[in-house]
Image (cartoon, rainbow, N blue to C red; front, top):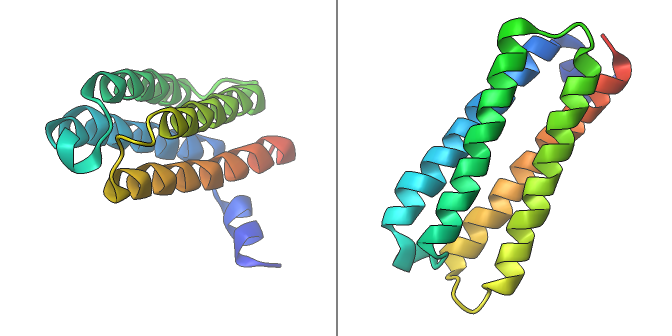
Amino acid sequence: MNKFQDTLNTITPKQLFLIDSFGALLTAFMLGIVLARLESFFGMPRDILYILSLIACVFALYSFICYRFTPVNWPLFLRIIAIANLAYCILTISCIIYLYQLLTIWGLLYFLLECIVIVVLVSIEWRKAATKG
């Protein structure tokens, strides 16, 4: 068995919701506070950063509520946040494409790395929801 499968078997849905919540809070902080203050360094317009940050806050709240109350039908709720995370990545990539001329290399790197991390989390969430255990 590989390490990914071992991790998938040992992580609980409750832990996944908590990881997702903290990750979304970190994203909201980075976008709404750090990147917004360093707009010229990253190149993404502040108003877009605030919108993305607000979305991350909503995701953090959703995941925290799921962590706190662990719904009986948790696979459905895990799939919902996985799809939402994927939609967030598509929105972020759309912003990168649309605002490419404004972004610096640091902005590109930040958003691409963020999307990679989110896609890995989505993969774990989706597989865990499929195992129902």
